[in-house]
Image (tube, rainbow, N blue to C red; front, side, top):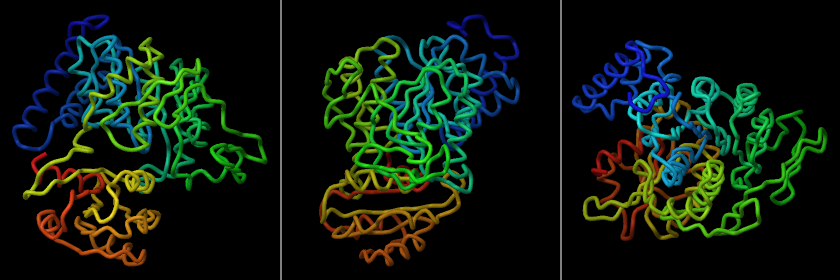
Length: 412
């Protein structure tokens, strides 16, 4: 493949070709993009293929519980100011999907890669990244990904001694704990709305003190580091104290935080904040998230929320009452089969909104809303929910596979 530091071996070429063929068959069969099955086939034929494909790239890894797909997209847009980029833009973020994405990037300079939290250390080992962005850690898919403190510990061990520049959120104690084993950390004050996974010190288990935006452990002295980049209202503050305006088409405070981290990553590769932020304005939607579509003659906005922290951020950006809201929750393999997290979401924030409930686990959600004292109607399909909704743009909030189901139905 042209552009590699050395030509791929015959085995690697065969693996790439077979992977692309498998992906094409999957697409033709209507089973999605085929990136995961293509990557699995390729890795079966050459287990070292991911490392081989990454050798000619400046690799940037992005991992978090929330915001990694969007931040990956924003970083990719910013770095295109400096050279061609290959990225797993559709969010296939485990080794097979990453391998599939890199197989199409022979002429790229940068590889901007979203990585599932569970696989971060292994992918970092294989790809020798130049930079790693760590955004946040909160409870999510506990049946698969384990408890957040354990995940932070795995990151801390896996990233110890890395040569990468680690760009990390100074406001999340779990992220600071995970990143602190690294030699070269750029701290970003990106904020942390959801705090319920970080009240005990990850270092010693003591009770965390959280006055205002600061935090520290009164027992062992573990504390918030001084950031060199910060989100301040609608501006990014760089290490020189200059304020750069954020103009995004993506909504909400969380996306301004994502843009701040992305600007810090881009600066690591010599792209100035002004240029990086201007390029980020081009992003209107990310893998269908935030898209506004017309369905059954109604305007519908599609929003993804997979866990309590994500739902909290999403509630802050929807239109106010009486905007109608459709909520959809599944519990399939990609979602995590445990729906107990529903009880950690503050659904009282939806008071005053007409609410329609759909999805595989609509009855679980209905019980949760009943306890929260919020009025709702249970519907069988998204069509029925849209037809039941009173006038106004409909906000659709769904977890992962529910979101994909709705996207397919509304033709997005």
